[in-house]
Length: 176
Image (cartoon, rainbow, N blue to C red; front, side):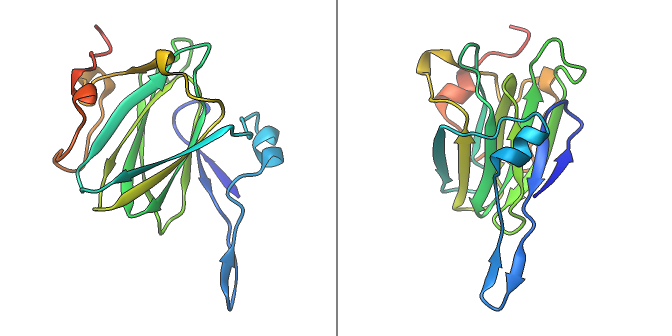
């Protein structure tokens, strides 16, 4: 695997390094030792999948608060998404900065999202499927969100929004 630092402290793009032959290829997508060597969480207690039927669907911006803040490794397994993260850690040099990456079934890139970040994405294709690996079990009472188009977050979505949950529309701005 190849780890590529993003401009946000502690967040990485993780690229598999396929070994190809006549059958196709084989590639590791996680390795506890390689993650730990970089000081990253490498053990994931929960996996979840999100299927998004329509291009333009937005999910986010979601996060969990301590002591249940989650570290995630997110990969698109079908279609394509624009994945967006925002650093909400007040002591971070990248506080309130955002980063976006296109994750596709074809590029197989994953985004490593440390605890303390808000996360969301927009489907760039119909039938976009997203795999989440999460370091701890979900605790509903710790779930929070920010409005998907909060101007303080400086997030640009590449497509018109076609589908968004009422819950995501109702989240407050960061300043609220």
